[in-house]
Amino acid sequence: MIDLRRLRNEPSYRAGAIKKGTDSDVIERLLEADIASRSVTHEADEARAAHNAASKEIGRATLDERPEKINHAGTLKISLEKLENAETLAKQLVEELILQVPNPAHESVPEGGEEKFIVIKEVGERTEPRKYDHADLGELLGMVDSERAVKNSGSRFAYLMGPAVRLEFALIQYVFDLLEMNNFIPVVPPVLVREEMMIDAGFFPTDRNQVYEIAGDDLFLTGTAEVALAGLHRGERLDRAKLPIRYAGFSSCFRREAGTYGKDTRGIFRVHQFDKVEMFSFCDPDSSWEELEKLRDLQEQIVSSLNLPYRVIAVAAGDLGAAAAKKYDLEVWLPSESAYREVTSCSNYTDYSARRMSSRYKDDSSSGLVHTLNGTACAISRTLVFLMENCQMEDGSIAVPKVLQKYLGYERIDGPK
Image (cartoon, rainbow, N blue to C red; front, top):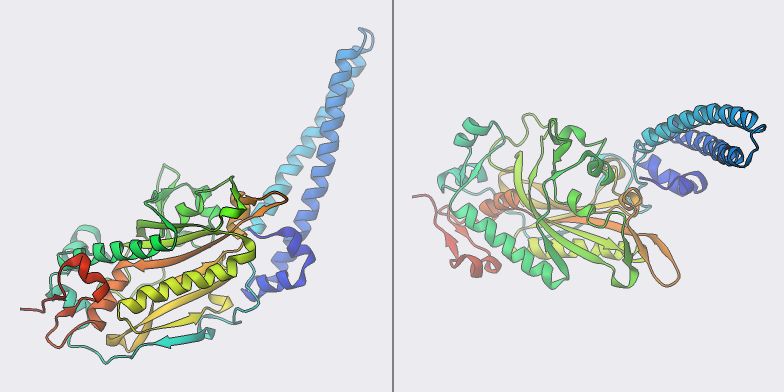
């Protein structure tokens, strides 16, 4: 959640929230609700102190004084209950409004909506459409079976088969080898979390319509390992000298893809279930912007080593999620569409999530909230899509990138018979 003190006192901080599309009326209502909440809490604190003092007086009173003391304490208790009810309602209003204000955008983030992104760089050659698109080639090579998956599970599900499975595990091994060399700790986190965790990680309430809920259990299937990784140090005080603490989480991910009816229905580009390796960093606030560039650099290393042409874009403020202060997307060229499509993203959440989870750093002289950052290392299904098209040979075979060959034991996946 946002820093109310900064929202109240720093015009640039408020401007960053408005830059992301926040209604200024919501901000004003939040600030007014916060003033009212702090006022009623002050009154309630004084009433609690008065009631406690009156209760102690009863114990010290003589028999003659006790009835009067008891009546006085009773009167104070009635007043206190009214103030505590008002205090609860005031805090609930602040909680409701504060979730409507996103993490302010960094000053370097371009203004505007989705179409206002800025291209940072382009790497590699845009290739012409191949003989087969990814959807057809996946079926022809026995790598993807969508038809049977639809019968059993519905649309936007698929069986990964044969060479696709081998490629998936080669990608995972390669990415984990690279990340461990960069001090990431491998993690397989839970894929089910409580509602509180979805809120604290910054996904609720804005992305609730994208998440599968397990009815009756107060549990939700996560759309990224980021959610569970964010809670690893909830309520902890981390040694500042040991930051950043980096994790690489592998998990299956689940997304409802609400609002994407008719988009990317062929193949495995946009599915309800997919596997992913996610990077997550608990970072010193003084170096979090350098850490964001580190995550982006690792993403570029992975994508370029797979021989995939790509570009890096700075996402515009209107297209940022609630928690991100700044975000980069890496988009890979998809020959069949003659367009770039997203494969990874990385974001700096600054102290937005850490504030709710009370994840702090400490050193000899100070303490404060850590900054949290996240980035996709490898989204498996989308990476397979890009490999099937960009590494496709004239006969429909797939040239295996050199970095994966040692995990697979072969250089090529044979084309259609």
